[in-house]
Length: 460
Image (tube, rainbow, N blue to C red; front, side):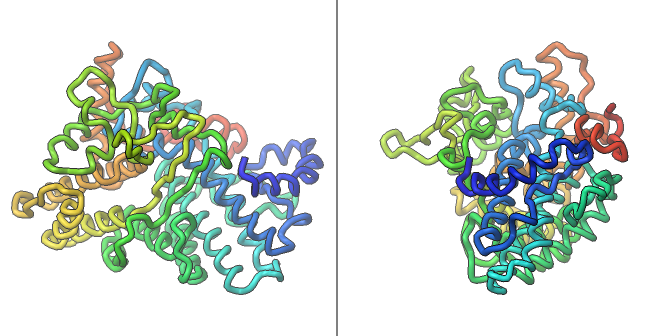
């Protein structure tokens, strides 16, 4: 456990013990986990409260990063015979699927809500430091809600912590558009006004990270004008990165998803995407993504090289054991935002500008330039941009959301699922029900909150 979180728990234990007998407290979701009577008094408290938010981001995303953003797409297929990976890659989700549970996501939101309420009361902070902490809390809350609406559509919204045990913890779902327009975008805009622009550490939320989030949200809304307005500056690859150090943070599921030396990976790279990598002449990204020597053999490709440091002695990554998994998880990179900008330019009639961006990235990666004239329609050009995003952002929790955002899920994924079902000698149903693009709400959440209504056609 992270040392900062150990300190936080020392503050929490007395309050938690007093409340364990209260049934209503146990039903609260999200649970406001920081006791305001014992906490939020000093600058160190504010720092630890901020650390608690990042601990929530770590817990949420290291467990679900690949499953939510990649595993259901054409990036991966199942590895082995485990029920979980087969169900996820064949669109067989249910309310009991582990990663359908949003508890950690809402726990992070709850911590951000407490920080937003309590930080203005911490007199020991300078205005600059207080505002910077507030900016990170607002942006983290927005980021978690953005994941939530992309996965479940309408979701319950909490923007304040529970003030007393008489507060009603159960809320119905709020429509996706309302969450985006009334919570996510205002939170990000507020964060931008508060952030300390002189601080550019990629391991915490900066102004660049906030702008990247806004770009992502506007593209989800198909608000191309606002997307184009936000012009990425500078040439830094990383904009916002989540750091996981096993010596401080313990074991995580990324080693299981990305491959390690001590376990069989949950997923293997689908041949659809490996063929795209291999067909991209001169593209350095394929050698940095997986072991190309395995291509064309019977060995399954189950290790994602791009997340691990290289060993000069072998000229290959140092593949850790699952328990020793140190990774830096890219949440936003400049190339991601540039390619979203290219997508927006294409949609607004500037195909030349779109391919200028695409070819700038391809040139940096050693790949040959694309000829805009070869793509006669807006959709064809968008296909090329999405292919570029798949190669550039492989296993970075992007591909599934790209397919959803552009309306391509059924077109791309249906034939793959049919092939996988034939391999497993299962009934060939494919992916034809667009309602199943959304994730089911977990049985746990439905039990805790009877005001929730399950996403159809899933059962409770």
